[in-house]
Every structure is written in structure tokens, then in C-alpha cells.
Amino acid sequence: MRLSRLLLLPFLFITVSTFAQYSKIEKGYYQFPIQPERTNYLAGNMGELRASHFHAGLDIKTNGVEGLNVYAAAEGYVSRIAVSTGGYGNAVYVVHPNGTTTVYAHLQRFNDELAKYVLESQYKQKSFTVNLFPDRGRFKLKKGEVLGYSGNSGSSTGPHLHFEIRDANQEVLDPLRIGFTEIKDNIAPIAEKIALKTMNINSRVNGQFGRFEFNLEKRGNEYVITDTIRTAGKIGFEIWAHDKLDGAANKNGVPEIDVYQNRKLLFSQRIDSVNFSLQYNIKSFTNYQAEQETRRRYNKLYIDDGNSLGFYNDMEDRGFFYPQQDSIYLFQILLADAYGNQRRVSFNVKGEKAAPTELTQIDRRNHSYLLDNTLQIHRKRKDELNNITVYTQQGSHILEPAYSDSEENVYLIDLNKGLPKTIDFGDNQEEMDFIDMIPSEKEHSYLSESFSAAFGKNTLFDTLYLKARHYVNEEKKIEVLQIGDEISALRGIVEIELVPLLEYDTLEQYKAYALSNSGNASFVGGNWNEGKIRFAISSFGNFTLMKDVIPPTIKQRASSNGILYFNIDDELSGIKEYEATINGEWLLMNYDSKRKLIWSETLDKSKPLKGDFALTVTDYAGNKKTLTLKL
Image (cartoon, rainbow, N blue to C red; front, side):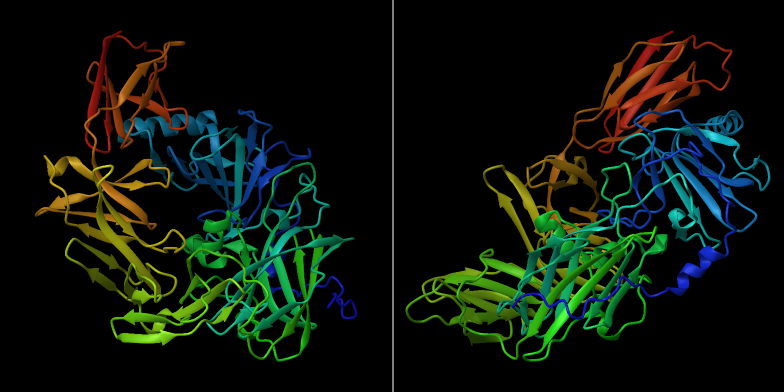
């Protein structure tokens, strides 16, 4: 069935009351913070979907250069100055009379007055990284006054200015809604794909269980799916989309999305402010599992369990769709950016009463596939004996195929009814790695002979069907704790306690490391007590124990204008700290972790560096390297 156009809606979005906070801001109150009155370009917008968080504020391009003037957006006083090797790097926070705060991050350096204050504070605290809160009014700024210079400090991946406007509650607002003329946007959002997901074991999309992606065809200013999609049961919609602004190729986020089902609003989303305390909820806002499997970040068009974000209007059924038999529905997804540019996606869905058991062709997936609380298993179809036996702790039961085609059977197992230990396929048996069902919003611990895992109340978004194995990899002669799936998102940490399976020469020298799929190790840490190591993980995967006895490296670079330069690095566990002295007195060494570069800065610029210099670098395993020089 082809797409019906009879009920197409005009581009009309519901007015959201939260936008009222922008109307309270006087027009022209803020000046653009960099290259004002010139056209600027963005590398990232407010609320953009990142891997671990919603992007706060704007990333303003600086054409790959550093050192551009950064101006106070409005009159105010400096409330905070931060210097760190990661995160925002060099950052300034300014409070304004209207109750808002502006933030300027990844700076190359501060203006002279602030730089002097920061330098003195670093020497007072004997630390490169500082978090300073000057007395109110100590550093007053006029609108348009230079407070620093653009750079690439912290975790920035290229020179730019990160700029935020926060309200009185420190929630980040969207600067593009303020009305800056320096950013041009005449481009409507772009939709790449639509996905439909079955939300329980009895739901189907085109006769099958799972999650299915559909390509879009562009027709004029809208996208369509020409063929009708057949559905049964509870269904969730998702979209892979982005927005572009004039003059920049960057793919930014889409802040406004409405979904209409036959003219009735089914789902409505507005990202107009971001609460930092809910940043990690992006893992429930997007389809985390699909992102790990496809490397595409899909925006859920439904409110899933564990999602406590406030981006949504009141809606029935939390955005889920329940089709009726033989009914045909016209769906329209309306996308809009902060400038009001709009795009529409249209497609038809037909409801089916019951899912067919015989299909023309089954979508080929992995041998076993976990989606929410349902385990899907594909097996080659037999002439007879197609039923399987599922063994759980509660007993066993015979399971028929949920559906088949000429080559395969598909079986669906509801994990809420018991975790399968063994599955008998008739000609062979397969052991499952499920070890426990972990409830969300409750403290829970799993304990085995060789390891334990402790979950807090806020560790999970939803119930977890935990898989784990603790074994020795005989080929590599290492032990591995394989816990959880990469497709499962964690909101908080899991405390692991491990009893080693192998004999180690000196336990205290061994720490936990995470192993990537390519075999690379990254430091996790841990502490030993009574022959057990305890460490925390923030994502699932493979972990092992390794000993790092190789100290960091220090390589002296050429000096310039009396400044000492060194490259510092560590091959395995990474740099934890460093300290330099001149004639026994502490000496500040600035640190750019991306370039693995440190350089000296004296408190008294008129005093040359002479005498006994010492630099000690320590890695996370406790190994130290010291370099001494006679200057």
C-alpha cells in the first residue's frame, strides 16, 4: 500500500510553556562572545546528542586558530575560574544582574588580571589544576570586555569557544533562542532513517520481533516511506536525524520533535534547557543498544523506563503506539530547529491482530539476540522436531518457534519468566551465560566463588539480565572477567570484588584493566584486601589483572625564552601526577595532556630559572620517573 497524502498536516508545532523563560530575557542583553557582529559558525549546538551526555551550550568555531578575543556577553562579575587537564580546560564563569551565568570554556589563556590571580592561586595551592571562587565583585566585567582568549584546552578536540548561558538554577539555556544574528540558519533538519521497535514479546513489525530500520525517500521538503509498515502489539518509534546551520558541515542536534498519529499528537519533545544532574540519562533518551551495534545515535520517540528527563509535553501512553486490527494510520514526524526551520517525515502503518507464524523471509540476525527482556534465537529449520527445550532454575519447558521461513526458526524467550541455563535444540545443547536478574532502583548484589558485583539504587535504568564469566584465557595466559554486554547502559557504577584465578608474584602490583575488542588495555585501578581486589566499573565489558612496572618517560624539549618544555608519557597505566622543583621550591608546570606536553611558568617573571631542577612523574600504578638538571 502506498503512502496516503490525504491527511498531511501543516507544519505546526505546539507552543511549549518552558520557552517562556526566554521571553524574560531582554532583547540585546547579551553580546556574542567572540567575533561579534560577524557571521560565526558552530561545531555543536545546545542539547546535541553526544555519546555520554547532552551537549550544553554552543561550540563556536574559530577557523582552527587560537588566541581570538573572548568578550563578556553582558555586564557582571567573575564567580568562578577553573583550570583542568580535561573537561572545560581553562574556563571563566560570569554572573549577571539578571540572574543568569555565562560560561566561556577551552580558553587558551585568561586576561592579564585573571591570569595573575590564577597563577598566584596555583602557587599557593601548589597545583596546576585549580577551581577558584573569587569574592563577589572582585573581578567586575563590562559588556564586551575581554576576559580571555580562545583556545583548545581541556578535552576539546580542536580550537573553538564553548559558550553557555545558565539560568538562576544553573540549568543551561539555548543561546540560539536569544536571537544572536551572528549565527545564520536557513536549513531545515535532515532525517536519515526511521526505526520501529517491538516493545514486548507479542509485538511484531512486518510479522517479526525486533528492531527494524527503514530508509527515507526525500520528496520536496519532506521525507516519506512509500510502503505501508505492518505492526501488531506495542510499538516504539525512533529517528536518526540531525540539523545543519549555514556555512558549516557539522551535524547538530534537533531540539524539537512532534509525532502525530492521524492528526493526534502521540509524542512531543523540546530540548530547550539541560540539567547537568540528568546528563547520563541520555543513555535512556537515545537507543543505547542500537548505537553500540550500528554506530548511529537514534532519538527515541517514546519515554522508556528509567527516563526521568523533562523534555516532554504531557502525552498519552508515553509515546507508544498500539495498532488496531486492519486499521491504517498516517504518521507524521515534525522536526524543527531553534530558528523555526521545519521538516516532515510521513509514512503509513497498518495494524494486524496477530502475528503470522510463516513468513516469506526472516530478517537475519545473530544466532542469539537480546532485546529488552526477550531473548531471540535463530536456528536452522528442520524437517521435524523443531521444538526446543529451555532449562531454567525453575525447571524446563518446551518452546515452539514463534515464526519461521523456509530456512530458519525464530524462538522468543521471556527472561522475566526465568533465566535460561541450557537450551536443548535436539541435536545439541547450548549453555547460556545468564547469572542473575538485577532489578533497577534497588540495591542488589551477585556473589559467586570467584567474584561479586554490587549494584546501587541508581546504577541501572531498567532491569538487567546479567551475563558474566570469569575464566583463564589459556592462549594469552591472563584471567578475564567478562561481565555484562556492551549493549547494556549503566547510569552509575558497579562495585566488583575479584578473587584471582591465577597465581601472581606480588598482588599489590597488579591492578584491574579494561580490555577493548582489539585487546588494548586501559587502567581501571583497584585495592587489595585479604587476597581480593576491589574496583569500580562504569561500563560493562572485559576486565583483567595486569602489572605495570615500567615508569613514565620524560623527554626534554628545546627551551625557549627561559621556559622549560618536556614531553611526559606512560605506556600502560597513564600519568597520574607530576611535580617540579627549582632549588627545592615548587615550580608550576602547565600541562596539555593532548600533546603530552608540560612547560614551566614562574611566579616572578623577572627571575630566571637557575640552579637545581627536578621533575618527578608518577603513573597510576605508582611507578615514578625523576629527571634532574643543573640550570
